[in-house]
Each structure stands twice: as C-alpha cells, then as structure tokens.
Length: 174
Image: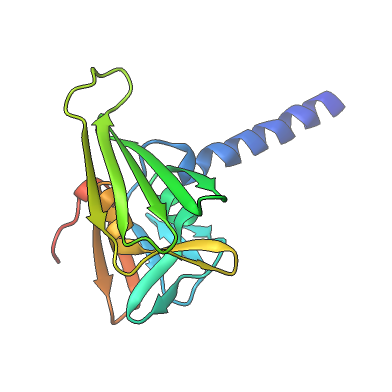
C-alpha cells in the first residue's frame, strides 16, 4: 500500500510539472496578462505569477520568467551581467533573445530548430524602449518588444487593462 501511495504521489508531481506552460516548446493558445493581478490566463487555465505586472509611464511590465514560461520559452539569468537569455523553439525555429537591465535593445538570434541544417541564421538588435528593470528582485520587461521578439503578436486593451499575446503571430483583428 505504501508503494502504491508513493507511485501515486510521484505521478501527480510529474503531471503537474509537465503541465506548466514553460516546459513545452509549443503553447496552448492565447495568453492574457491582467493589470493589477498576479495571475495570467492561457486558454482559460489560470496560472499564478511570481509578481504582479506593473504599468509604469504607460508601459505594461511583466516578470520576464513568467512571460517566457507562458509562451513556452526557457530563461537563464546571469546575475553578474544582470541579463537574461530567453530561448524559445517554435515552428522549426529557435529564437534566442538576450535582454539586459537598463539596455534599450534586445539581441535576437533566429536559427533553425533542432535537427534542421544551420542555414538562414539571423542576428539583429531590436529596440526595447522602455528598458527592462529590476523591481523587488525580479527582472521586469515591457511585454510588447520581448513577446514580439519571440515570434508572437501582442494586443493591448486599455478598457479591461489586459495584454493578450497570440503565440506564433496568430493575432486576428476583432
């Protein structure tokens, strides 16, 4: 009986970890961040954020790790350089965005994904104004430039105070 309970607990833990959006290379659907709430929504499923988004001087900032996980990306934080490397595989492409606290640009490398020959590699600088900030120990970035650098479309609804991210550019005007 104890062995069965141990296996059941292990199965629940593994299932929960696998359902976390950042652990997959593809996301489920549109992602909605809410001003003033420490949660976001992916196709109706609610996820808790590490820190609530903030609006500073008219710009919507979210924790970089939460945004990355929501779009199916991984993040590596470099504390000494105060920078984050965000990597996302999508549609046979690998997007690698490097953002740095106080820097007004994202360095984006766009390469073929796993198993595809290394042709069509691009590296470019994307303007990121306003710049990323550290707030309460969290790296916060304006949503639009980072989400778009990772291959998404973004819309802002001032009336509801929401930012909607359409993975892979699936945005359709209403």
